[in-house]
Length: 299
Image (cartoon, rainbow, N blue to C red; front, side, top):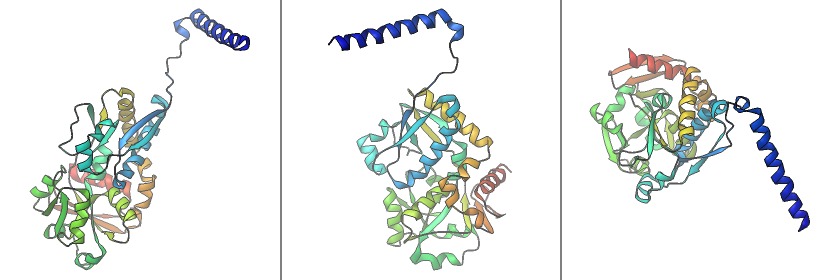
């Protein structure tokens, strides 16, 4: 007991001494740069299709580490979209990526993500192996408008495709998108550049990605960050600015960017639904592809 008491007194006196030492140095000696401990960030990632977003998020937070410290990213299980809404589980996350219109986001602050906009607005046609003969004869991505596309009617870009007169097969869940392909109600679906790779990786015996054609449209993407997590909000803003100034190099070197192997394509064609124009690009490496689409859309 005496030994424990001695330890307590030593600890207490050391803290008092430290406090007096800090007071003697005065406010001018205080380090102006705060030191943050590792912070755990929960993201909504209820399905493997969101896995690429985790890589993207980690890249952003790495770029802002010197200013805001380390963040540890973890997944928040939410189930499919319907289960997320019914249970309200999505409200427990720190970041929500690309929610549907029926999600309650009153506790979250919106951040525009221009890099993700470029990736999400650039769509790859994905179809099943059994339907490959239907697509081998396609010479231009504009021809995809004549085929039936399976698409979630709750997604914001459903209306974009509808306005552009795509033959839409409306579904309500993610699983129904591919169910419509399996039972031949639809011929193909459209997925974001990095989404398509992840899905083929997980269902590679069934799915094929078009190797030549892209569909492009303006698609503003936002991240929704919990309002009380101000440090995370500032870190994301800074990280995205740094990544954009590096012309997507960090993302192209990432797991998803490397495995898309777009640089092996001799050429590809982009159908811009906003202008009804097909643009042919040589050497479709991811960085050049996204930048070309951005310039094409501005013109």
